[in-house]
Structures are given as structure tokens and as C-alpha cells.
Length: 596
DNA sequence: TCGGATGACTTCTCCGACTC
DNA sequence: CGAGTCGGAGAAGTCATCCG
Image (tube, rainbow, N blue to C red; front, side, top):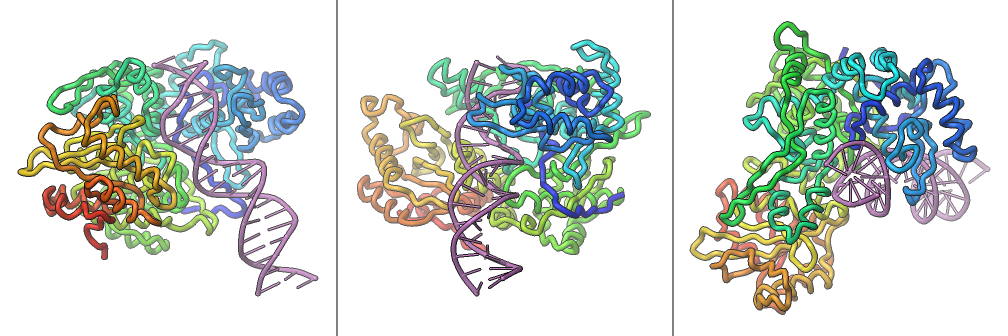
């Protein structure tokens, strides 16, 4: 127990434990049955489906051979297959692709196939072998496959096996616990998503519910409103929705639309979010088994190294760190201090701070493990099945620069929620530009008590903030940009800012019908501008001076680390908004304090 | 809406060219 | 000569919203 196993040879890091797409249990049963050579599904697949669906050049023979191997263990590549471009013209070239009917094809794509594989694995129906990169069925998987009686609906036996499996999957326990123990027992996918997994980190993004409701409130027509309701959800929100859907299908949770209200410039706006959930009586009973209440022994949960992080260049490092912390915790049921964890990590050549360890432990709670958290330490109060921590190739085994920066900033954030550390990831990920805009403005409004909002859409700045409680109020027009290697503030973007400043001066609905400036408070007549990005490079300072010269308005550029430090300074009371006003908009980069 | 579907982006792997 | 490194291209892996 608790040994840290070393995997030799070529080992391919994969991701397990987080499932984005599937929710059809019958399809899951079919996928598990692929690994049981006595099942009807297996015989269909190898006998007729794959011969018909997969062409010779796409590897029909290799897939059939893979299914004929004994004992039956199937390699990842044969199960999942590959993608095609464009995806809409994909051909079937994977066993799991062939095992499930798609939405518009007789098979599913490689990505849904990967997700079905992850699902079967996360619920303990198949096991992974590192050495051969292949999967085989477990006793639980056999039980599920045997329980099939030919109906498309789940029968009681299958349901019982599935419930046992779901209750050993920590994130499902997390969702059940949130629904059972929070003050508000009726939660939306956003409320669940924002408290699921390694919150505030790449791969676990969650849109703030407030932001969504605000956006719905501000939508200009039904089309836009519908679009937001349909499309706006981040990864963790989606994970939460899927898990809740599984629990619903097993009778542990019920879906009920929830009315959500938000305050907007003194007015209350409310809307209904369809993906909201409440726990059922059966769910409460099941949760008793999870938590080991009454006569039940606590269910041992399935944890994997691969679920400790999903993204980023130092993913393996972070996975290893969290796995080690978990291994240390599970060695006893006595309280263990954070400093002793730090010390034990350093014996493994992982040099970390207490803050990082604390945040990791909160993360472990958020993936659904039960740990009592105290001021100076924590206490393990759960049961898990042992798991392998593979030794990754050396090349992958280092902290990334971003992780290092985060750690530095983390140490300075005593008041601002550490969830906002995600901004450091977002600021350097161009495809998460939209979320970066939202979160950056949210930091200022939610943590620093500025009024204002994210705007989005074309011909509007990314956001605005303003004050409403000073002798001399002011407003700021904000533009944000997520860029991989730093932002040089190109002329086009500088001109755009000049235009916004101009529009705000003239305030003519002829020039810009959206009249975005109306969101500023009425009594504001002092304005500034601000650019936010990861960090700035090139001629950005000249561009800022140019904007200022052209418009007569002062502004600044602020890197994301500094924005976080400013937020902390404001929230802690060390920096007043007046002081910020007087110091920050110096027509250059604003650097509030040097880190030592 | 639900249950995947999609293009995009990041990282890995391969392989010939080149260097020391 | 040969081991090591570089770098470009394509394959593999993983989203983060999208959407029929």
C-alpha cells in the first residue's frame, strides 16, 4: 500500500478521470462489453460491425486482430483511433468508435471514443496497464457485462452495479456532497462547476454564474440570450453537468430549473437556468454509503494519477506533486502538518511552499476526497484504492515558468481568492481570450468592489469599471488580450482604444448605436484607459503615450501578476482607489510593487 | 435541449541535415 | 566516422465552447 511505483520503458502520459461528453449508460455498457469476449456486443463487433464499418486501409485487420488476442487487452490506439480533417468526413478507425452510434453517423469520432474509454476506466470497469498502454476488463466490468439482459433500458442489476461504480468515483461524490451539504441545496452547473476539481487552473475553467446572468440580462435580443444559454459553459461547468446527468439517470439527483437573481446597477435581474439539480432521497442514502455513515463501511474511491491535472506543459510535475501529497496523507489518520508535507516533498526533490500544498489539498477536496482542513495542517478521513504514480520521462519533469509565477503570486494573495490565479494561465492562452476578458473584469468588480462589467461583442471595449463612493469618481475603459508570448500592443489595437475614448467623449448613438458608455455611472467625468495582458513587450509604452497624446486621456498597461497584486492591495486596504487613480495612470506600465 | 461534434491549439515523434 | 542536436512537418492529444 502506498508504494510509489516506477514504470520503466516507454510510457505515454494519458489523461484519465475527467469525462466531457458521454452520458448514455447503455453505450457505456456496450463499451465495457467490448472487453468481455463472451458478450453479444463483442461478437457483433468482431463478427460484423468492424468488418462492415472499417475499411482495409483504415486498419480493419489490425482491429480484428486486437480483438482476437488472448487474454483480451486492447491498446489505446486501437480503441480510440484517430481524427480526420474535416471531422465531419471522418471514417471509422477505432474499436470504441464502432461500438457506439453517433449523432449523425453509425459510429462516433475519436474524441467521444476517448471519453467513453475514460468513463469506463474512471468507473472501474476496465483497468489500464502502463507497460503495454492497453486496457482490460475488471471483475466489476464483468459483472456489468453479465447483467445485460437484452433490453435497451437499464435493468435493476445493471443499475445497482453502476451506482456502486459511480459512488467510487470521487467527482460524483463531490457533486452529491455539494448538493447535500451547502446552504443552498439547489445548484446550477455553474455553481457546481466553480467548486469541482482543481478550480482556477488550466483545464478546470468555470464561468462565473454572476457573469452569465449579467450577460443574459444585457443581451439585446432573444437570439443573443438563447445563444448564451446554449453555448456558454466552461470545462468544469460541463464536467459538472455530465456528472449530474449520470446521477440523475441513476435516480440520485433530479434536474430542476433554478431562478437566479443578480443585482445590476441597483436593479435586480433574474433568469432561469435549466441545468440545475437537487439531490433525491435515494441520493442521500447513497451518500451515506459514500461517507460511511450508519452501518455502511465507507466505499473505497478510485483515484488516478492522471486525474490530478489535465493540461499545461508541466502537467506531469503537478500530477506527481499532488499524487505524492495524497500518498503522504493516506499513510495515517492522524493530523499532519503542512510543513511536514513540504519537508517530505523536498525529500522527493519537489520544492514547494506551504501555500501551494494548502491549495493542492483544497483541490483534492474539490475532486471529491474527504480531508479535514485546519489552520496548520490537515487530516485524512477517506478511503481510496491504491494507485500507481508513474515516473515520467525527465524531460517532462519540471515546473513550468507559469507555475513558478503562480507560486510567487500565490504567496502574496492573502485576501483575494486564489481562484483568480487562473488569470495567469488564461493571460497566456490565446484561445481562452474570451474567458480572460471576463475573469479580469470580474477580479476588479468582485474582489475590489469596483462597479462595472465585462462587455464583449464587437465595437465595444472588453470591459469598464468605475467607482461610486469617492469624492472624485472615475471610470476606466479596459482592453484585455491573452497572448502566448507577451503583448506588444499593435497600432490597430491602440487605435481601437483611441476610438473608444473618443466615443465615450462624444457619446453619440449615431457613431455607435450600442451606446456602451451608458454603463458608466452618471456622475463620472474623469476617465482613464487600461490594457491588461500576461506581460508587455516591444513598443507598447510608445503606443500608450500616443493614445494619451491623441485623446488627452491618461492610461496604463498592467501585466496580470501586477493586476493580481493591485487587487490584493485594494482588498486588504493597503491601497485606496484614490491612490490607484493618482498613481496608476502614468502613461506607462504600472508596476505597483517589486516582488522580492 | 442533450449528447456528442468540431476546429483549434499544444505537445510529441519522427527523420534528415547538420555539427562537433 | 559517429554520436548528438536542431528544426520542420506531421501525428497525437486535449480542450473550450458549439451545435444539429
